Image (cartoon, rainbow, N blue to C red; front, side):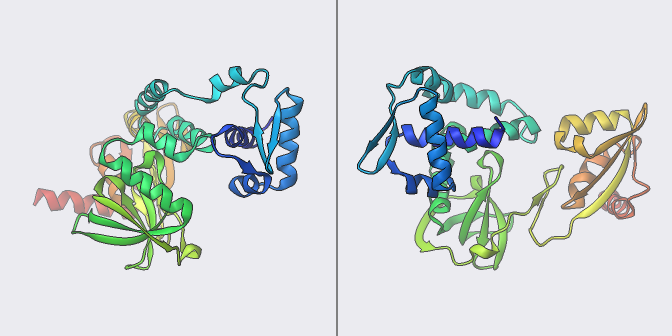
Amino acid sequence: MDQPKLERLLRLMKLLTGNVEYSVDDIAERLDMSRRTIYRYIDSFREAGFVIKKSRGCIRLDKESPHFKDISQLVHFTEEEAVILRRAIESIDDTNLLKQNLKRKLYSVYDSRTLADTIVKGRNSSNVHSLIEAIENKQQVVLHNYQSSRSIRDRRVEPFAFTTNYVNVWCYDLEDNRCKIFKTARITTVEITFEPWQFEDKHKEGYIDIFRMIAQPEAVLIPIKLNLGRLAYNLILEEYPLSEKYITQIDDSHWRLECKVADLQGVARFAVGLLDDIDISECAELKEYITNYINKYLN
């Protein structure tokens, strides 16, 4: 069975075994599936030995079905298990591709509110829950006393997507009339205004490069080409694991990094300490940036 189909089956199983009863139309809307697909999946459950119950137009998977308890052990975490799972996943570097895949697969199966509880703690937890609610209901919010690098003030926005681990939230800023990213840790409180989104057609996530620099959706990305020695190659894989797919081997001791970045600051910060092991001659813009950077601090 292909992975997308398996994920849809697991999401359907979760809805059919939850505390809320849904009609086929409700399920089709929530899972973005056709009624025909829903009935086909339900037939698959029935053929596998599950008991399907119908009541007042709603469909449920009977928890007394044969094998259900065995299956439930695979798709349900106790509170203690969730804490252990969070700790295990959080021990992986934030940019590690494995960690992102684990998060993505969990998001596809589990309710985002439940999953957020195992990841976000303290004051951020209630703010993230409010943002999740606003995204689900397509509502505007006010980020009270948001602490940017230049000011602390309220921001009225339309939140529409989180980055990995709920660290940032993409929003359409009604004051600046463009999509921007906000760090959830810098939000004091979130107020749901119950005003509907007005600019959904403009909602678009920006780009986060391998050095964790962020570009706005309309930004022009900067192409870079670097030749790496063995030390630089090993360090970039350790510090920025997502760089791996942009690296090709030249010979036994040299590798080439070719990608696009949101800002030269990130790659320059990495390259400055390794100039004796990195060739930047093919990237004039980066070479100029690093030269100005070094001169500025030497003077």
